[in-house]
Image (cartoon, rainbow, N blue to C red; front, top):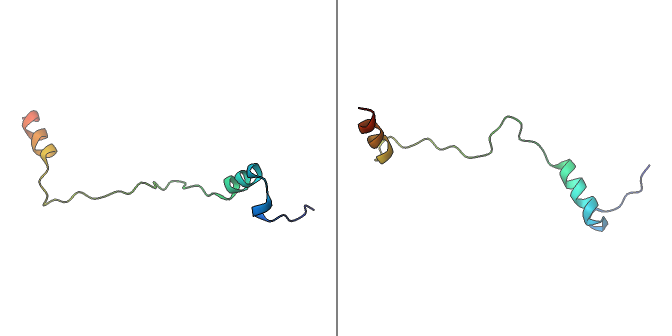
Length: 54
């Protein structure tokens, strides 16, 4: 059985290793925030796109 050593007293290398093990995985969740565009707001992109396709 390993002797308990407080986290602060561990070497930086061991601290990094422990942090990496404790860090979770996002899985299928996308951490980037997703914003729904406002329909009332004027958008140049949509208007420009329509004129090119026609």
